[in-house]
Amino acid sequence: MRRLALVLFFALNFSGLISSQAARAELRLPAVIADNMVLQHGQAVPIWGWANPGETVQVAIADKAAKSTAGPDGRWQVSLPKLKVSHHPLRLRVTASSGSVKIVKNVLVGEVWLCTGPSNIFWPVKKCDNAKQEITSAKYPKIRFFTVAKSLADSPQPDCKGNWISCSPKTVGEVSGVGYFFSRRIHQELDMPIGVLQSFWGGSRVESWTSRQALRAEPGLQPILDWWKTSFAQFDSGEPQAQYQRQLQQWRQLAAKAKRENRKAPARPKKLEDPRQSRHRPASLYNGMIAPLVPYRLRGIISYQGLGNLYWAKHSRLLMSTMVRDWRSQWKQPALPFGMVQPAPYPCDNWAKLESDAYSLQREGQLLLLDELPHTGIAPTTDIGDLNELHFTNKQAVGRRMASWALATVYDKSIPYSGPIYQSMKTEGSKIRIQFRHVGSGLKTSDGREPTHFVIAGADKQFQPAQAVIDGNSVLVSNRSIAKPVAVRFAWSDTAMPNLFNSDGLPASVFRTDVPSLHELLPKQ
Image 1 (tube, one colour):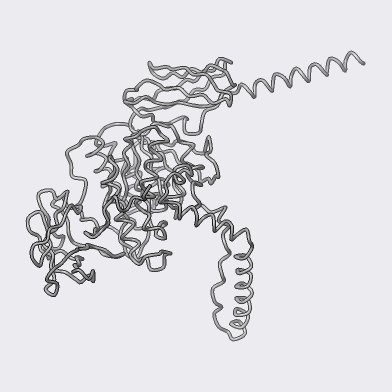
Image 2 (cartoon, rainbow, N blue to C red; image 1 turned 90 degrees about the vertical axis):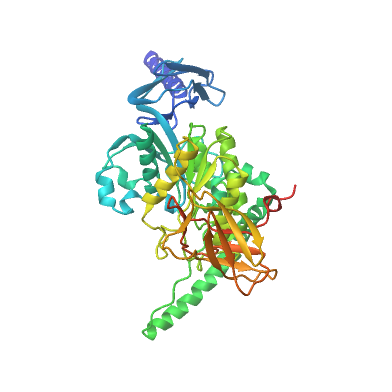
């Protein structure tokens, strides 16, 4: 009996030792490195994962291979030599010295883009214009999408949840309309496989997509961090909850009275959100939904920041600049192209903001970023929005224009990609001449009338409606009551849908000539 007990004891412990070793030696890949993925061609490609500390790991695909050793935390990373475009499915083989093997199947090599932002950029194909026709015709198996599952985190996460899918009528309805229409055009123009990483959260703000390290390193963003710090402290104090309870009690009394009098009850007060759980809090989306994708090799990024940052509109340029610099640093791609959709006109009266012209300031911030950082661009949308719908459905035009920017500036195609952008002003007596970039073969209006939505001001800075006349590649702006004008603004309102275009049919962007210079906007060190 004693002998049998000893045998069982050793058998159980030996079995546990084997199981423990197997668990420690398990080879693992991140979610983004999986079946159906697309790898970036023409650049060294990082592949990473986890194994037993000290193990040697080899990665091979086609005729390329690389080795690495897992560190103390088990993480390993290799850099595959440049890969050629592959339209035919490949297998990526990962082998650990313990004998563990991972095979990633149906891999293509082409172009990889990250598509990110709030709700307008993940507005799905099934809700876009001509959705039924678009879905039926979406037979593009060489376009692949990886969607990052929503996740908030207080520190950078090593992995995420998600999977790669091939584009087909069965799958395309749920993917980003902008991402699909963008990738479809790139695919058709370049005849290459396209991979799109999708990372979205509705209403999200720029600071939530930026690492805390980058936010803290930028002095001009300290007011935003201080605001969040105060919000956390106030919530911890219990006063906001107490105030909510008082409002709730008052509402119950009013609702009871309304019921007795057979009237409609007032709206119930909204329960306060714990700011520590907010999707808007600094770095929360970066940590959970961007950090896990680093360092998956990208060709570029397209972004669509909407109304979420109206409260911090004066910081728009600095917020976007910090995020772009941050992501380029995290990916170790200093020239990583970054395209931005310029938000469409929309009434913003009910949105929280500190300035009445917050929406104009936000869109202006994107234009200022073009002059500050190379390899950035915008897709204008002043002519394709819907003033009655925040989520307008013509995402085809947005994706097409974003693709035009990429094809022209990233892939060196000779095509127009921008509407007129303000370049300079010159006073000529009682008129101001406005010069533009990206005029094509000339300026025009969409309705054949004089350009609309120009205003002009004298030294008192009281802006008045102006007459605008196209003169070659410039516009002459004036007002009979202003003899000595000093500044012009164009489409400087939430809802302006101006008629000024270039010869390529692309609309002019909002601007003001009295914007502070870039060095004045940058925080003093």
